[in-house]
Image (cartoon, rainbow, N blue to C red; front, top):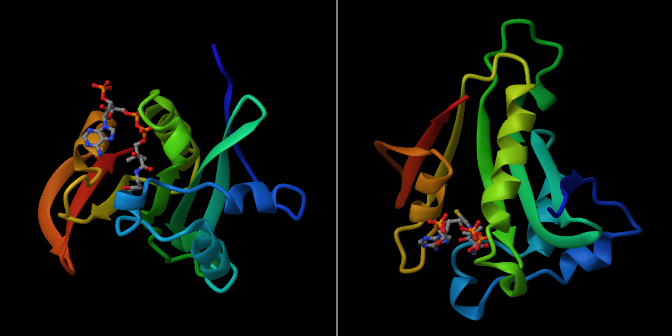
Length: 154
Ligand SMILES: CC(C)(COP(=O)(O)OP(=O)(O)OC[C@H]1O[C@@H](n2cnc3c(N)ncnc32)[C@H](O)[C@@H]1OP(=O)(O)O)[C@@H](O)C(=O)NCCC(=O)NCCS
């Protein structure tokens, strides 16, 4: 059984994470890892990790974790939102995304006052809605911009 881990991105593994990419027809569904990692450095709520199977990087995740930027406010009600999620084209369809999502959910369960995990996805062809359903997310009936919002109870 392969071992799945979420690893910090450092100057050592950065290039290998920047090389991960989705299929050409999926490019409108998620930002490149270069854009996401850059944004992460300018957003204090960004929690981001590379997804590894054994010693091989195969994907990327970024979450908005509002507690990271509001630690000093005891009244802050944190929210946890999936911002980016991708599995490299060569490694899609092997069940890796689902395993990685389990790790992400476990991470969130360890965060203070974590009650729900939210995300939104595009309505375009090939969108990840069915994938998220298989990971336990349910539609809320809400939309953000032109994206459908889903929720998982933690
Ligand atoms: C969506 C994504 C992360 C799924 O990763 P993956 O490793 O290929 O998914 P898995 O192999 O773990 O699939 C788990 C299940 O979801 C299903 N699934 C995966 N992607 C799907 C899709 N786009 N549409 C319908 N079903 C999908 C699989 O068939 C599988 O079903 P099963 O458990 O019944 O066999 C990956 O396709 C990806 O990176 N897509 C491009 C980026 C993207 O859309 N990110 C989300 C932005 S909101």
